[in-house]
Image (tube, rainbow, N blue to C red):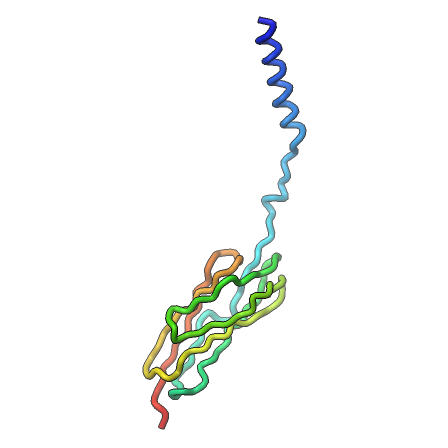
Length: 136
């Protein structure tokens, strides 16, 4: 009986020490995040002639309070080639994604570009569209 009482007292003291030794840090719930805000999410090339310059820019700003890191930019087809900086974009700073569409192809087009980053909300889908006509 005395041994059971000693074990019970030991358990109570152990649990009391765990609760007293580890105060709750409520700051973990106030984490900082990056937020990517694009000037526009659709770039319309309009009607352009075949073999003209197919490069356009998507401008964005990190409106969050943590550095923004773009980890991947992928186009929906091989006719669209994205390029971007892999350097972190600090809060309040701006950056650009360069998109080059192959203007050898004739006709209307609509393509998507998926931006993967650490920004709040996950992947961002951008769109380019336009119409390419034969040069005269």
